[in-house]
Image 1 (cartoon, rainbow, N blue to C red):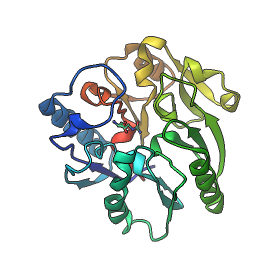
Image 2 (cartoon, helix red, strand yellow):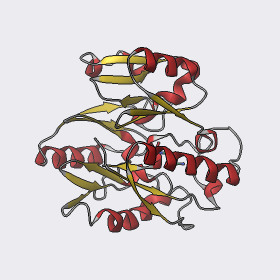
Image 3 (tube, rainbow, N blue to C red):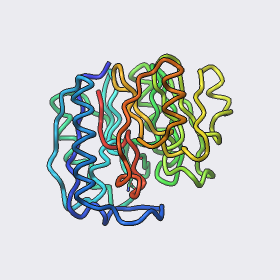
Image 4 (cartoon, rainbow, N blue to C red):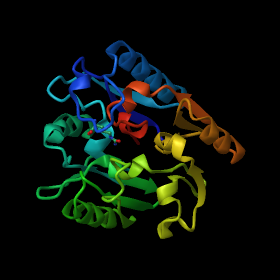
Length: 256
Ligand code: CIR
């Protein structure tokens, strides 16, 4: 059960952020509209929002999830793997201080993006990626153990189609994982119910359970139907402009 979320309004230089996909330049009016709808969805799920102002120093800073791991037992500030994003963490530390008295830090040479960290109840899957290195994963694993969580590492560095681990998997509660075909048969997921996303809908593998709803990228009817069939209540959101910058639903907020 989440009660709070932190979001950041996209800056007008949003399109200057990092991207690996070739889907065109995001239109800023649509970026703002889609972000507002995302915030409304979180409110409709019963969350209280802390909204940070746009920060033009960091065009990717609306993708807040990469800057912190917030758990029910403590918080960890990350060390984002892209040099242009390193400075994003300072403001997030300030924003979470009143909620989390004890905060750990991922320190250099460790790098870690929150998008690589998938929480599934008391277990965490830690993705090694182009952004998250072995030292980062090792530091996080130790902090999580101190907080009483277990973790296991998944190496996604050879999976060209995903930027972060959570581009390819989402834990949506009720012992269920949404997974891309590439990750569906991973040995770590054998104990979970799995909803496998078809290759044409792989972007939608990044979805987010928020209380009674599952936020899911609009325009992916097969995943939507599969979620309904398995008893979930999807809430589709238009994500086209964020997708152009490699962003998924989970990365637009920190939920706790
Ligand atoms: C980046 O490349 O860092 C941003 N343009 C997108 C980050 C997306 N974050 C995420 O999936 N957790």
